Image (cartoon, rainbow, N blue to C red; front, side, top):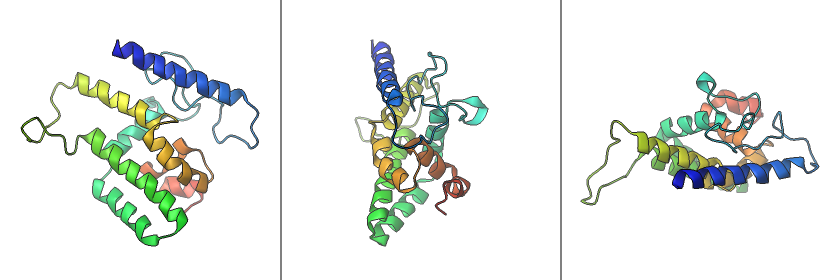
Length: 184
């Protein structure tokens, strides 16, 4: 039942984004094609992911970005957030919002702070099939256009004059991505 619900939610996002993509735009789109950012995380619908963008081993760009978020160094993210807070400018405040969302996504996805009913730290089990399903759901939750990470980074992406997924990809993959955005 939950799988069916996840597929229906994904298809709803696809339908909404496809409808929005068909409306005339006032400015050119940053993506190579008008396909929605996330519409089929299980890759059941052919051609639904961003054209021309993929992560390592040809995986969908969303999963590649999520892997980078999960494996990002938490102290690095926290320091970036503190730098943005200390700058005290409106633009820095917008970037801080994105850093804080990345911190929250990193902690959630990596299991930082997970405890059992007795207060003991939990470790990722092996095998971890159900954990993998939950992590895929977190990709959908966070990187969907109405998701917490996507919405928190949308303002920073606008400041960088790019789309949100491209911006998140740039900041989690390093300085070369930032140079490509023209913000270094």
